Image (cartoon, rainbow, N blue to C red; front, top):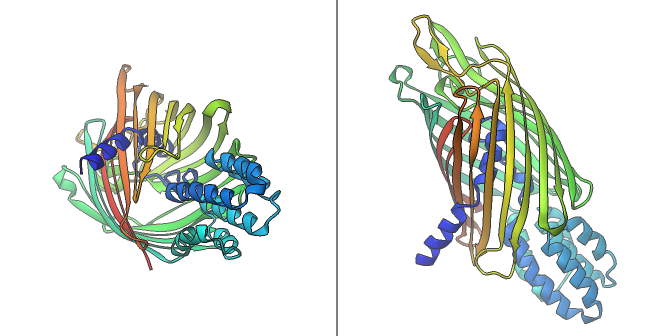
Length: 450
C-alpha cells in the first residue's frame, strides 16, 4: 500500500501540462473535445511489445543487427521508420510479428490482429490475447464531479454520470457516448439544470501516417432554450516521425459559469448557454537529443442567447525535452519537462453580465488580452498491472482585468488498474488555477470488454 501511495503521488506532478493545453484549447473549459487522445499510445502494449522484441531477437540471431535497429526505433517511438525497416527482414513470420507489435502501439488494432494471426511464435500469445480483447466491444460507465470558480465570483458545480459503448473496426474506434449532467450553483435563484448529451464519434488511422477524428452530438437541456449541436473534426498528418500537422474544427458548450454552461433569465430574457466554435492548426516537431516543440493557432467565435457574438484569437508555443525514457525501469518509464507560452484575445469582454438592477449574473473569461507562461512536468509509469501518471505546471499569467501578474498552477494525477483481461479501472483528479478559473475535477470509470 505504501508503494502504491508513493507511485500515485509521483504521477500527480506530471499531468499538468496537458491540463494547461486543455485550458488553452477550450479557453478555460475543463472538458476539452478530444483530450489530446491522438497523442497517446497504449503504454502497457508498448512495454509488452518491447519485451517480445527482445525474445524474437533471440529466435532469429542471423538478423540480430536489423532487429536491434528496429527495436531502438520502436523504443524511441519512431514507429513510421520502424515499419519501413521491418520490410527488410527476410522471414515473413518475423516481419509480421514485429509489424503487429508496431501496429498495436499505434492503436491500429485491426492491422495488428491481421499480422499476428499469420504468426505462430509462442512469445506472441499474450499480445494476441490482448489484441483480441482490445477488438471486443467495450462498455465504460463513468462518474465525474466538478467544482469550479470563475474570477472568484461565479461558481459552477456538476455531477456527471454516463456510459460509453465502443468497438474497434478497421483501425478506428467507434464510440457512442451518453452523459447526464446535473449543473448547480450557489446562486439559489437559478436552482439546477439537468442535461442529456448523446455523441457518436470515430477516431483512428486509415494509414500509419494519417490520423483522424470526427464526432457529432446533441446536448439537451431540461430548462429554457433549444438543444445544442456539438462535435469536432480533425486530421493529423505525420510527414515523418519527427514532424506532424493537425488541423480541425470544433463546437462545444463552454462550461465556465452557470450562465455560460446552462443559461439564465436576465430581466425575463433567456441569456447565455454559450457555444465555443473554433478552427485550429497545429504543428508538432521532435528534434535531436529528445527535444520537442509544438505551435498552435486558433480562431474562434463564442455565441450564446442574447449575447454578442464574440470573436477571439488564441495560440501557444511549447518547447520541451524528454529527460528520461527507460522502458526497463519497473516504476517510472518517462519524464518530460517543457515551457508553454499562451496568448488569448477577445473582441468583447463578457465576463460580467448585469441585469437592469445592476445585479451580476455571470459570464465567461474573455479578456481583450491574456498571456500565460508555465513550466510543466509530466511523469508516466507502468508497474505490473497499474499504469499511472502525474502532470503539473506552475507559472505566471497576465490579463487586462487586473494588470498584475498572477500565479498559475495545477496538478493532475491519474491511475489505470487492470483488474483482469476484461475489466480496467480508471481514476483521475485535476486541481488547477489557470485563465481566471479555479478547478477541481474528479473522474472515475470502469472499462469492461465483452
